[in-house]
Amino acid sequence: MTSIAERPLGVVGVVDAVTGQLRSRILSGEIRSGEPLTEAAVSQAYGVARPSAKAAIEQLVASGLLVRTAHRTARVVGIEAETVRDVYRTRIRLESAALRELAESAAVPAAAVAANAELQAMAPGPDPATVDPDLRFHTALIDALGSERTSRMYRSVLDEVRLCMAQVQGRRLLDAELIAAQHAEMLEAVAAGDAERAAAVLRAHLASAEDRLVEALHGS
Image: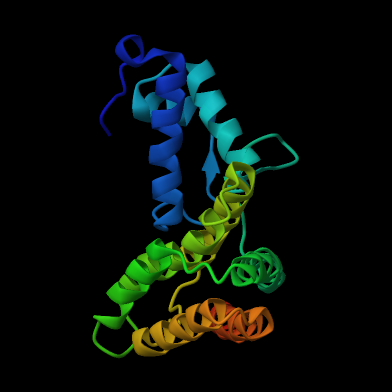
């Protein structure tokens, strides 16, 4: 791995850079569930001082991607069915509230429309390429509320969604055409000011994704 020079970036810049690289490797599945990340290993791998490596690990612990074991070694969190269920229940709570608030003013986020247009342009059928525009669609709903804290909270949940997907082998994704159709129905309900219909479509949409991840987890 390429070392990260501390002097030009400064300590905070170095910590953020290491955190970002480790986060990407965890969310891609390169670093697997249960794998340890020690300060010494991170320091050596990225050519940074131990305090910087420790700070990067602590950021990932705080975000929920790593967990401290009894011996204080940080490891990538394990994914269980209840973890998936809880993550998706949290998403439903946050996104349902966002849809209801947007429906009050019939405000359809342009970023959500753009993300869904990408899905609509894809060939029908399951495709890993649907993950990014799908999550960008949902993030746009939250960001449209204009709350920095709500957006920050939601992104921590999305990290766990990506982790679930990365750590479950043989994941079963939804059809791109179906995803786009459900998204479009949500936006139509928001534009019509129908908060309950928007929330109901969201619940069905996320329940399908949740069930497929749990099923894949049981089959892995």
